[in-house]
Length: 145
Image 1 (cartoon, rainbow, N blue to C red):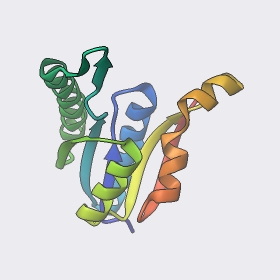
Image 2 (cartoon, rainbow, N blue to C red):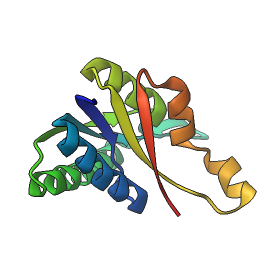
Image 3 (cartoon, one colour):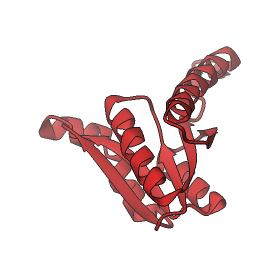
């Protein structure tokens, strides 16, 4: 049975479905839950005069991702689950895999939405597919149409 479950939560429809499925698994196995929201690394804009870093934009992004995380934690608390959470910064796949290893997770739960058309799939890529290759434990991919 899974004792430590890590949920990568982004607030999307597929993320919300993964949150619901994660609750059921956690309740069944009386598992510890850990939520993460992964914020991309801050962008540095390079122009004719060199690079520009906007600390204000980074803080706004951090607040947005903290809000997403807080909403997920609130939903779990309303369902009677105690969970911890953290906003991570960097590449989603690397950060989720690193966090799973650090927290001793034996299951990662992530949502996935099928993308329309080959161009969308090529351009966006798949975090869930890449995560399966890099994860230190089992991965449950919750699919929404």
